[in-house]
Length: 202
View 1 (cartoon, rainbow, N blue to C red):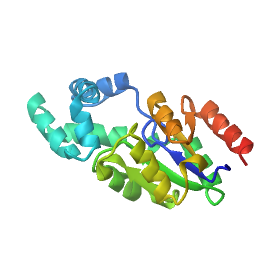
View 2 (view 1 turned 90 degrees about the vertical axis):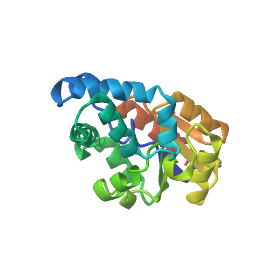
View 3 (view 1 turned 180 degrees about the horizontal axis):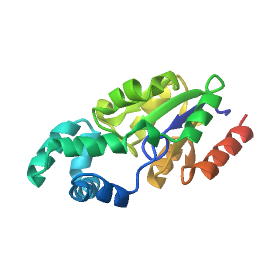
View 4 (view 1 turned 120 degrees about the vertical axis):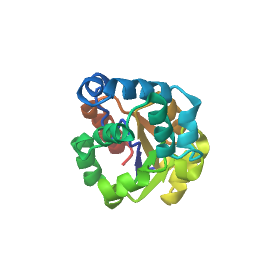
């Protein structure tokens, strides 16, 4: 079945993450905040945020009080981490090149502030046909339902989709529902794998 849709993860694919060691040393309270981030990423609270059961800034406000640091320092950390300069220009260029030839989507495990960031700050809704954010749906990758939802909202079938993500477990889950998967490692080789797959399935 030919491919008519390409779906991209956001964080780790479109958005490049900054070096944690740089963040620790270059930002006010960076060491404390990065330690809190590392703990957050390994905790069940992460999934409460990703499912939309806990607002992102409610979590960070409580964490700032717990760490006895200004909430403004946390906000600054988050602003730097998500600055427009962190978007991968090569990935954006490839998405622009695919637009019109394929349906394009974003499927992201992300909190309740993400849609505003993607649309108002990055204007990615002008590049893709649909954006699925886990916190808005109460579903998270690698649950199969969120992949099926993304395909359905794009008006296609999973078997006609390619999914690009930086986590192997998310790729495996996409493949289990019938999608082709491209594991995003580095930009150049990952885009080459995507191009090769699209050429084979044209």
